Image (cartoon, rainbow, N blue to C red; front, side, top):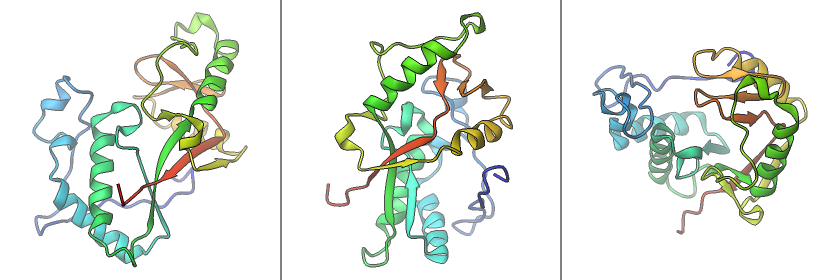
Length: 199
C-alpha cells in the first residue's frame, strides 16, 4: 500500500461482534473453500453494513469493485462485488457514490497476449496464452468498457507493489504470473464500466 500511495482500512468491528477475520477462500472445490472462515462464507449483509458505514463516513465520489464474475472467477472477488453492491444499495440514490467495475476491452487483452508472446522467455516454463485461447470473464467487447485510464507510470508501481506478494505472484520485466504460471502483462491502463442500478 505504501508503494502505491494508497490509504487502507480494515472493516474491523461490525454487527457489535468485534473484529472478524476471513481467510482466502481459494478456488471452487479447493480445501480452502471449505474452511469455516473462508471469505465466501462471510455474511454479506453484515459486511455490507460495515462497508456502508465507512462509505458514509468517507463520502467518496467513486467506489471501485470487481465485475460480478470477480475478474477471473475467484470466489472472494465475487463475494467482494456482492458485498460492495449490497453496501451501496442501502444508501439513498441521492447520497450514493458512483460505483464502477473493472473490465478489460478485448482488444487490450489481445494486444497483451501478443506482447507476452514476444517478451516472456520460453525457458521460464510459463504458459503464454494465444489470442485463440479463452479469456477471463472480465474481458469484454470494447464497447462495454465506458472509461479508460492510461498512466505510463502505473506499470512500474504495479511491479514494485507486486514484489511484496512473493507467496502469490512471480514478477518479471513488465509481466507476472500467479501460482498457475500463466503469464500476464503488467499494463499501464485499466478499463471501467459504471454499475447500472436500473438492471
